[in-house]
Amino acid sequence: MTSEKTVLITGTSSGIGLAAAIGAARAGWTTIATMRDMGKAEVLLKAATENDVAHRVQVKRLDVVDPESIAACLDEVIAEHSHLDALVNNAGAAQVGTIEQSSLDEFRAAMEVNFFGVVATTRAALPHLRAAQGRVITVTSVGGVVGQPFNEAYCAAKFAVEGFMESLAPVAATVGVDVTVVEPGAVASEFVANLSLDVPALLAAAGPYAPALQAYIARTRDSFGNAQTPAEAAAPIIDALTGDRPPFRIQTSQWARDFVATTLADLDGSAVQDLTRTWVR
Image (cartoon, rainbow, N blue to C red; front, side, top):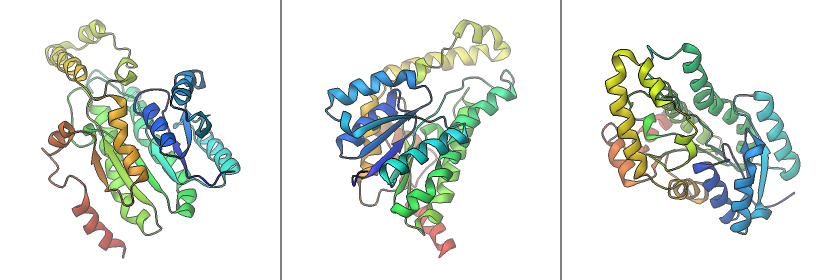
């Protein structure tokens, strides 16, 4: 067992999750770095060794769409460390397409990973976080604030996550648990590469939407060419993890702040939180 603070982070095989795991360990936290495919742990373990934090990083299997996997992982964490001080919901998957060309199964799959996975993991962790007076930090997206073309399923899920967390935050605060969402913009990571998009096939199947899809793909490639690094995007997660009272909503860059400002005048979520806290007092 350890007296160090313990954080569980989902989706740490690459990108923001990997960078957040290393950042949390460097900040002195015992870091439970989870992933669905344990065969992808090598990159994370190598980074932990290179940053001299391997002694603070434990890799465990957790599949956010499998409640038994979530429960088994949390049981192990509590058995080994006796407490859990923070949860970082990071696991996610992109889904590109418009609804007329996408199947309902594809849409549901995106919702399962990006929304219900967050709900299930948060629900399972909350009793432990309540005992520790801990916090929930969830990586959403600027796509959880501004709907984006050909991202209907992904943005729907991220909008749902934002609504879920914004509603949960004042309730969780009454039992000592802080809730924060972190909104990255474009991040240069394997997230986009993992889409494995067959662009010619997508365009061929897009029918009347092909010109719009082609323009969207070109714009997306350009935006990810000038993206934040995973470490840059993960830095606000570590700030939220280690800060005294993190705000409800954090953007990871000035670009992200400017982008969500098109629909959010209340950038840090304080006005909404001030209002809804009065509903539970």
